[in-house]
Image (cartoon, rainbow, N blue to C red; front, side, top):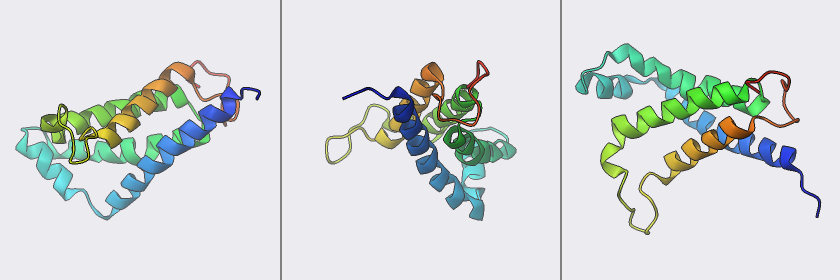
Length: 132
């Protein structure tokens, strides 16, 4: 079977981006609970608005393949913030089935890191920039 790395990258971009986009759409109803988490940690509540960038804007850019590497850097940073702000105590835990407690966040993070190194591939809106 012939390899098709570009198709694989498209599938990765759409999978990671679409699944996170669903989380972001769910937060369009309000992010007061996230603002509360920030203030409890001593951070300004307005920083919670970054969730829209991490969970809506960057996934859309990743899905369409526009500045995928840059979008993946911002996306991965947002996922790291979520891990350390909300799930820091779960990093070394296993869930009731033996899987990593934060495996979904891990998949988002490592999928984005992979895209940082690979870029979008040729099935993308933009392919000429170093950030693609």
